[in-house]
Length: 405
Image 1 (cartoon, rainbow, N blue to C red):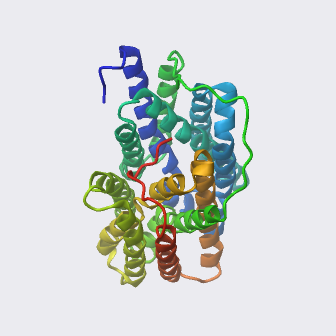
Image 2: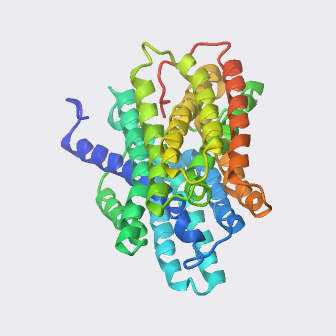
């Protein structure tokens, strides 16, 4: 993605940041990809409630980091925020690796896992906004294309994590995934430290306090409900595949891979066809695609795990462009706070993530099957469809799927 306006140094910086996007995607899905190991009675033996609770520290630290990241970048520089995020990710993977040596002591192992997800949330909340900002700064003549490429790489990483863990489980050492992630993160830190990684932007010395428009809360509600829909796939698909459909560990991982792969492919696809298929149509149609996919997942018969892979792939397509378009629509419509839209939307998305990641666990332990929960999620997706029509009934539609940093 080089251009004539960039020096060799900037090309190196851009390549490192693109690499960080790929690795961040792998790290982000490490815990959901390892759900079979974490809940296996012969391994960590977590109950559904314990597995769900595992993600609460991640949600809290991700919300805090994403909301504070902009202020920290203005005070300490985007490079330092980015490096801090990578270090937090690396700490998370190290804690996950160490936890395997304490599986016989449930309390210690679970404490290490909780600390690991807390660091993972902080790493995600700091690194992701920073690499989007740096990518835009390094490609000033092609911001939209470069941000699309970065997020495609991040999505590729989320799709690769389940594949990697399936391979490592087959080889007899599941912990190969966090070890691989740790090595990649250490390499990124080593490659990033000597680089300038400057954005070229200067922070304003004054802050303008504005009231939050009522319409923002509609966008916030949409983001939270979307977080529920995405997380029911991202965190619980492997459990559903193995317990309800009787899938092998490899096939369950393949279903999760199919979900994240179509999330990524959909974001790229709808960005490429927006000239012929406007963003407004995409925003209104995708929730109903997701609702249909959830209804299909809930109706899958026992003993037919092969049907789960395309069903979760369809759910990924339905989810694909909804979160980035929510930010883009918000930036277009709420110009008075456009610079704060991304952080606010991501924070509420994380709240929805936490609701689904934690809430589905106790409900299952109380006897509510995942099939019922997927049916309920189909209703949530229908509500998203109604909100999508409300959010697109006025104002100009964004000309891009992926919002500018």
